[in-house]
Amino acid sequence: MKLETQMQVAKNLRTLRTSKCLTQAKIAEMVNITRAMYSSYELGNRTPDAEVLFKIACRFGMSMSAFFEADHYKFLNILSKCELYDDELLELVTNYKSLSSFAKGMLVERAVWLTEWDKIMDSNRKALEEKRPGND
Image (tube, rainbow, N blue to C red):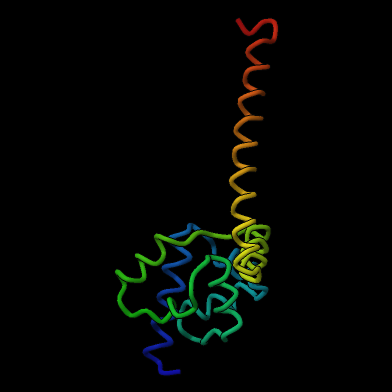
C-alpha cells in the first residue's frame, strides 16, 4: 500500500473513532487486537489488514471502501449515516443479509408488528401505573 493511502486510512480510522467518542482500547477490543496495534494503525505506522478493516466496517454498518476516502467531507458524511452495532445488532444484520427477498419482507412485517405490540404494552403499563392507589 502506498504511504499516502496508508496515511489516509489512518486519518479516517482516527476520525471514525473520535466521532463516535470511543477509545482506541474499545475499538481494538471490538476487533480482537491489542490497543497498541490499533494505535499503530491510527498513527500510520502499520497498515491494517483487510480482516481488521472489514470487522471495523461491519461494526459501524459501513463499507470498507470508506476508509480509503480522500475527501474529508465525504468521509464525514459517511460517518453521519453510520452507527455502532452491538453484537446482537451485528448478528441480526448478518442474518438479514443472508435471507431471501421473501423472508426479508416477512421479517420487516414482523418487526412492524412487534413495534406496535411494544407500543400497546407500554401504553397498558402506563395506564396500570396511573390506576394504582397513591398515584392521584
